[in-house]
Amino acid sequence: MGMPATPTRERIAHPETSALDLATIMRAAGDPVRLEIVRLLGDGGEHLCGELSQALQIPTSTGSYHLKLLREAGITRTRAVGTQRLISLRADDLESRFPGLPRVLTGS
Amino acid sequence: MGMPATPTRERIAHPETSALDLATIMRAAGDPVRLEIVRLLGDGGEHLCGELSQALQIPTSTGSYHLKLLREAGITRTRAVGTQRLISLRADDLESRFPGLPRVLTGS
DNA sequence: TCGATATTTCCAAAGTCATGGAACTATAGA
DNA sequence: TCTATAGTTCCATGACTTTGGAAATATCGA
Image (cartoon, rainbow over all chains, first blue to last red; front, side, top):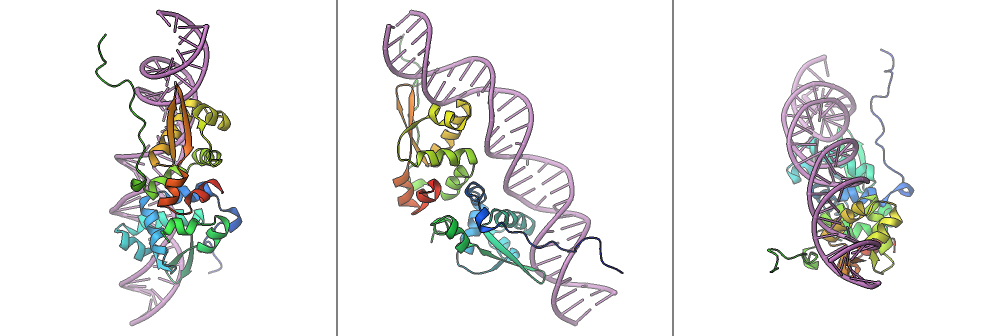
């Protein structure tokens, strides 16, 4: 026994609102798969990785890759509940830094 | 003499406003060089390829490449005057198709 | 018709990105 | 514990992107 040398799971990293970069956000949103994910998140709810992957008919490994990019760009927030990941749009953070952006991304 | 087999120069192609695609626009804007060009065009004026390339300190061949991508995505309009190309933002077209987008792209 | 100027096109090299199967990790529940 | 489930990470592959020098094209004015 004893503690493992490293934590078993890193806390999920999200950029601070003040650090959001428009070029990074645009690049992340500028892919048909990721833009469709953003549109699905435009309902304001929390969605699972598997649910989004299924909606887009892509393997979960591909979905997980795209969701990581969206999170690292600051477009989405991910929180862990059990083995699940609840993903939502950072609409308020995006709006405060880039007024009008959430509406553009989600089509209102 | 006689006419050449092909026209000496194609008319500069621009997508119609109704054909503008958000993922394509986002991808085009999601590059630091191109986003900076868009911000410079945010003054509403017409700018030359060489002027923009110089402002960004890149070779004109690189500038020309990025300007082609912006034009093909429908973000900019290019008109020829002599050997020069006058480039401007398609702010009204973008606004009508994606309300709020020009403000987001240019930082107002 | 020549030379200067503005820009585009060509090309190759280097870099980045998307894809998806397989292996792995974490958690819940029996 | 064991097993199922959810998601991540690893990895190879192929595809696309960005870069910039060189060559080509177009236009202007002397």
